[in-house]
Image 1 (cartoon, helix red, strand yellow):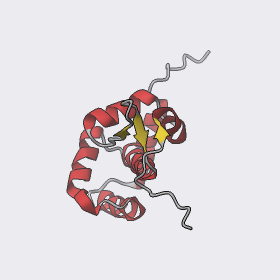
Image 2 (cartoon, rainbow, N blue to C red; image 1 turned 180 degrees about the horizontal axis):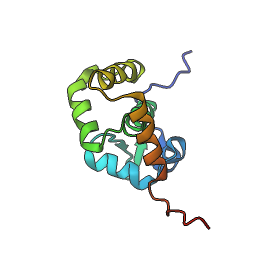
Image 3 (cartoon, helix red, strand yellow; image 1 turned 90 degrees about the vertical axis):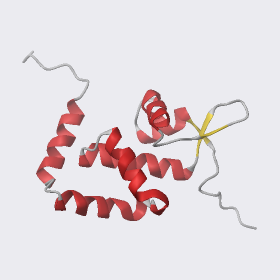
Image 4 (cartoon, rainbow, N blue to C red; image 1 turned 90 degrees about the horizontal axis):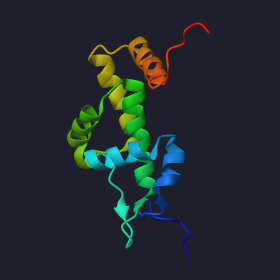
Length: 126
């Protein structure tokens, strides 16, 4: 008997995925609205995410947090990747492209630092 769960089976509600990806549920709704992470719907119209969706979410985070790509850029990347999307190999390819475009590791680190401060109040030395 095979007990493995298919990667495309919708299992997880938005709250679980938000916790797993450490994002707000609104962020996942925006991804849905933008068409970059579209979960399936339950009979009661609730969003349900699969294991494949989790991997796609991690790849979106990698692109936005590490490389500094905005949502429009993520959409373009997914369109270009099309059916060839494979998160296991894409990170290395995207890093190579970023380096070829002159996006240095230092710039990527700077982008990560800026993003980590986003939404925080500036410190006044208090």
